[in-house]
Image 1: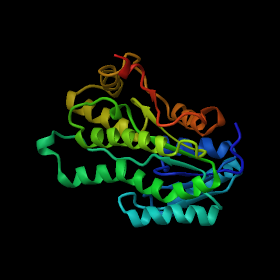
Image 2: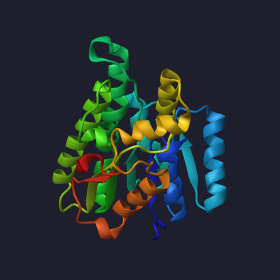
Image 3: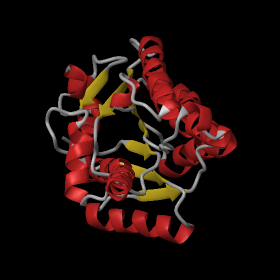
Image 4: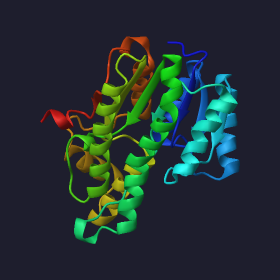
Length: 261
């Protein structure tokens, strides 16, 4: 599909799912604004590399997604420097694992801020211009944990459930405006975040990484293998396409059968 002439902002796009989505959109001819907390020189190089491999304009912005003022500047800068903001992908996310009674308050606040509140702030800033133009795509990267729960992940599960709820409200409010809002709910994806969990389990249980991976994924998913970042990027491309123009407030699942049980 072609997204030539469209402008996409992908938050948290310096690695993992976000970077894969940025690459997929750029390959489809879309101008891209990347975002992440990497050092300025690293972020600039990532944008330059993507521009070089895709042949489209790629910019970058280091907004901290816990800071509403920086989020507002990210959206405004995208619109001013790239000409518009047609596709917004809310992907930035962080994680911390602990029992509720031991969960650090500052970790709770940061996870809610990045995984939930940041999406409210980006949409609030971007939506007026999308509605005015009569075309827009808002894609929230949620999680299987937006639909079901696991222990030790209170903040993450709460934030992702909230993001699904926010997606539904956005979808209803955007009906018949030309703007759609939908979410993607991945299960285990081969990202640095997931690999860190596997490494932790391997060390705790005194087993190899392959065995730890199989045990961790198999505990939840009947199909015991990772979803790839490219598969999630493909779902994002689908939601940006005209084929998905009548989808509103939905949650697309790619979780190896996790939520089918």
